[in-house]
Length: 585
Ligand code: GLC
Image 1 (cartoon, rainbow, N blue to C red):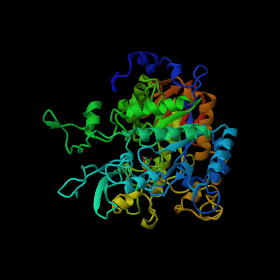
Image 2: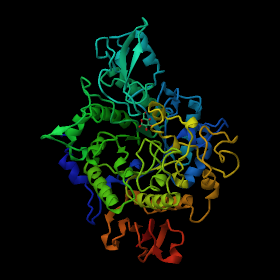
Image 3: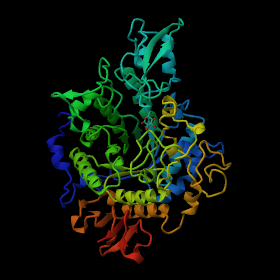
């Protein structure tokens, strides 16, 4: 079976029927197939910024534990926690120096055990964020590799190469770091002379591990089992498309030519896309996916979601074939703007390509790497992801972003499959778009000398109790590792709790209805009979989800109104621009 051609037998069993018949129930969580991850709502916690339990301004595991009841009330099934492992924090914990311990910033292993126990009591699973593509340069294996010298087994744990040029003074190839600059750093050898180079697709503090080395594979089997034994429900796997680099580490082709003309990525076949970039999405990475899956299969009811930024979605779907990941983040969906035609296309395509391999699609709008979606949607021209927004950038239209963002969330949470929510999203929390340079921590900011301000704006600590202190209750002391913008007071949870029409109450309602009517395991179809030129409509398990993209208001079809982003809809009777309603037909 080639990577682009899912097995025909699987296609027949699993393909969803988008024309109006029911989906195969096997795709989603049912009595016959009780795999929770198929239809779950997973809430991403960025531990630095969720809740601070000890008042030092940095979020921690005890803080999370204390706030669990609020998440249970929100109605989520699981938490994905961004990394809390021992780390010098050069990339906010995605630079791990010990995969089997907790960084003192966040607590202890005992705190993790308490968290799992308390979450379990509340019916919430805990998913750990594993970072296998690279370690920290402070990991004992990297320190040993530096000390051991060229050609040693220690160096074989990472990607060391001699440089080009007469004296090895040029990097081994032309690869660039995701965070800016070249992807290689030259070291000084023990004799004090300039020596080999090591590869880092991200920051220089994050050397890439050598996944062709069986020792690396064995080491991670152990790491997976360590957290599974401690009760983790599974993993979010960081950079799941990057672990294998093409043999020989060839240069990235600067311009692709085919039949005499350059092809855009959209025109390329999957094979051509694999060829184009020698460090993303190489075919051999699927062996690693299968290896991880085998370890997870040793345990009951665990799942893993891969961060596989590979497009098109048909290609991403090859990461979730039956013996690979359970889920991937649907970045095609995340990147889709609030646009009727584009949403119709991406949902149709997602259900088709993931359905073809027997995996439910996931749906996601925000995470710790992208501009928060209520802010993105406040622009006509969306700023480039990863670049961030700073005080000198054009500023978003806040009210527009709130309206579209809420409508987009209500559209998303009605879809069948897995849904992801990023902390603060349930408050309609915007990006911090005017964070000063002095506060920047993202390596992107430093590696591009401030040209790309980076991702800190979506990582600001979240407000709990309005006005109790400087950080609106994030910490007991008011301390906060990044300052909140003034607007966070208004968005604080305490200002929304029990307030009709608030974003928090909207999310609670959507998740409650989603659960009660099993929409996560639903029977989806487009509903053109409820659409006019401005609207997009689908029906899932008897619930009509109708979104208006404007400009004119539309009459709401008859039926019981289950949820709405438009607070006064019952009085007005017409659904306005940038609003979504759920109706029980
Ligand atoms: C992933 C993470 C991101 C991190 C990078 C390097 O993309 O989501 O936050 O910087 O990997 O680990």
